[in-house]
Length: 609
Image 1: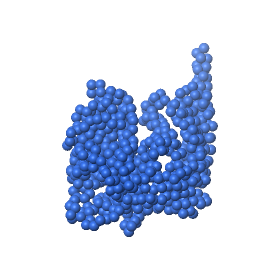
Image 2 (image 1 turned 90 degrees about the horizontal axis):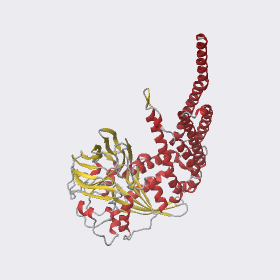
Image 3 (image 1 turned 135 degrees about the horizontal axis):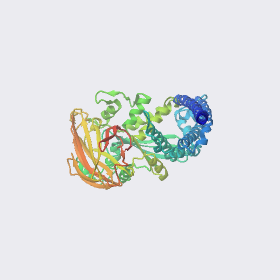
Image 4 (image 1 turned 120 degrees about the vertical axis):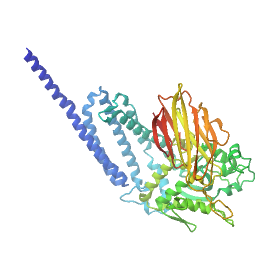
């Protein structure tokens, strides 16, 4: 009897092993093999995209789609086991990949007829044969055709997002051997959902692009140049302006001039507001050049318009584009040295300021005192931007347009370009993309540090900044200690005007505002040379002070405050909004002694525990 039972047990064991081999192991090995083929094909597709060749991209996309279809077919052999949560999630992931591929195919199909317009190499390119103006005009007139499939692409990305979002990472083990399983799944899921959300946010703006570029109606734009080396609330001192029109891609410059000439066109300037009278030096009247006082761009434009409407040079505009010096440096880096009005500009480092030559050259032309009157001294900026723009559309798109587009999107993300539109729908679209310089709503911990240089020369060119945010649980609430440090390792410039010297580095006179969650309570503010102010603005609590940073020296403020009860350590999230115009700031974030981040802030950032 025992031998019979043993025989039956062995039979069951062997049968189970055979079944396991055919039902489990064999499908796994086949799926793994197909998955490796997908990865290899995906690598080839990525290379094709980098080569900017639309014909090669189409070929590799077709190949990748075929390999993925084979993978899907093999994956389907285990779908009978979707009652097992891991298999169900595997199915969702495979389906999500299918929708992503559909979105990619539709996107490539949409751009193929116009590939040379957007910088791809093409077998038969006609676009490069057109004049510089003709290229841009053709691009604008066909842009709406490129966007014909955007709704279909958006729906496929949405379908992929739904499936990825439904995967619950918490049911997976934290680690499997030395592999971090749960964190990896959460990271991949977060990255994909973030990408999908970005596309959803971008869609309204993409649809508006033909209209923005004057396809249906001529548009007038006001370009304001911000000198970020003399920091102001929205990025920098308003130093020059230009007005231009665009219709069907054809651009015409109406005016390019010094911001001082715009102020001179106003007969009656009102008394300066509190902030200027308190922190600036000998500025009793409110000038356009000082109007970007608010960290929220829309509010600053309201202040700008309150003065601009009085100007004899005022034009009715459809939008405002604000640029800082990084745009000039980036474009010169891409297109090379550029000569304007007999002056050569380059992105190469100038030893006189340890900064790009274009920055020093502009300061030398604009700010150095002379015994004679220099007409349109800051209008050179408009001429330089105009020359760089025509370089951009004068080259073959496949050579530079891809790099230029990537650089400009990076500058939008990092707030070196800010956009404002009069049309409510267009304005809402740029706000969704966070390109509009708005102080944003956020339900967790929040931080925005806004620094304004009032009569401190161009010292932001030399000052390095960094801050540390430490949150500690005390008596049931989170207490924050924020340390903001400024260091200027360079010597003071010879600022003697009679000798005609260029005054770049001097003591930084810094008006600082710290925006934190509404309901935060100030405990202490160390380092301010003036009385600390506390108030509410843009749905935030604000702590305001003033400090000076000496040359070859440093200064800091240490602010201690409690966060509102709604912000807890259990689900701690911190959203940091970077100030426009800032290149980078060293950043360290801690929660109850645990380091959450130690790095550099170059754009808005969300940090989670």
